[in-house]
Structure formats: C-alpha cells, structure tokens
Length: 216
Image (cartoon, rainbow, N blue to C red; front, side, top):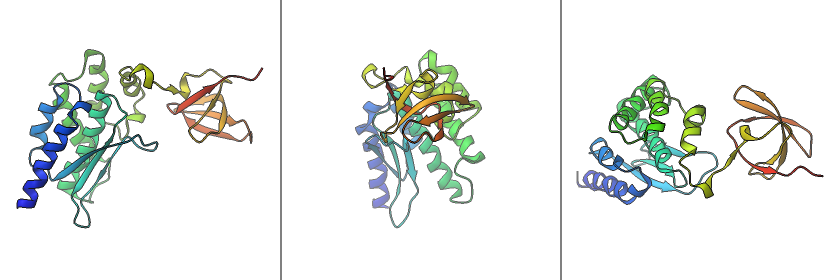
C-alpha cells in the first residue's frame, strides 16, 4: 500500500516537475484525470523514431509514459494524452485488445474532449483538435492538418522543413546523410531518387528534410 502511495505521489510530482512543457491551464485538467494513477512519467530527449511511448507494467516495474522534450506545448500535450489513453486501456483490457483499436480510440477521444471543452487550445487549433475527437488517429503524423497546425506553434529557430514543402526536382538530405531528389507525389508519400545510387524510394511527405542547393 505504501509503495503504491509513493508511486501516486510520484506521478503528481512528475507532472508538476514537467508542467512547463504543457499549455497553460492543462495541468489543472490533468491532475484529476491522473489521480491514483499507478504510472510514472518522464520527458526524453528528441528521438527520431517516436514522439512518445507507453510501456506497460512488467518485471515488477510500474507502467511508464514518456514524451519528447523538443515538442511545442500543444503537441506535447496531445502526445501525452495519446500515451495516457494506452495506460487506461491497458488497465482495463491488458493485452486482449489491439494497441490502437476501438478501445484506444474511444479512450483517446474522451480524453481529448476534456481538454477541448476546457478551452486549452487556441481557436486556430480548435477545429483540428475537434477532428481528434471525431476521428482519432494512431499517429499525429497520420493527420496532416493537425501536424501542420501544430507546427505553427514551434519556435522559429526550431522550425523544420518538410518534404512536401520542397519543389519538384529539389535536392534534400535526410538524417542519415543520404541525398535525394524529389520526384512525383504518391498519396501520402513522395517518390524520390537517391542521388548516389539513383535508386528510388517512397518517402513520407511529412518527413523532416534538409534542403540543398542545386549544383551549378
């Protein structure tokens, strides 16, 4: 009992510790939701493959939610809610349901709705956030309108270039250092040719890229 109480207090303490990552007013909404939550919360450095994650309890360790520190406040909150929904689903169903199945969608939608009606999000984000309530997505990268709206709140010095913003035939590099030329759009992905090997790849249009000058 004492151990569980310490963990509950720890969750509240962790939320308070990281409250500066959250939009104004959201901490007061989160506390009642997380009351009695047997789960820890950590902020991590930028990860290329994910914005946050949820680890269920295992091997005597309690569940854990993590969110990347490089996100703006509104994006940070949405990712936290995403992972928090996983915890509530795990507590209720364990491994009996799919990770982003109907149960998760229902829970995520309900959580987003509480923040939506608490007027945490500015007016220009309200419409896209309402879309999360009506049609939850497994990833924020799957919702182009949401991602574009959230990027407007990134600090200017941290704003990145997305592949879809480049022009046809523009050169760019990815984090792995390889150089590509942008070609035709294919739904949510764009056909690109690696300059060195001339091999073609389909790259997600919302991929972060570094624009390169064309050789003279």
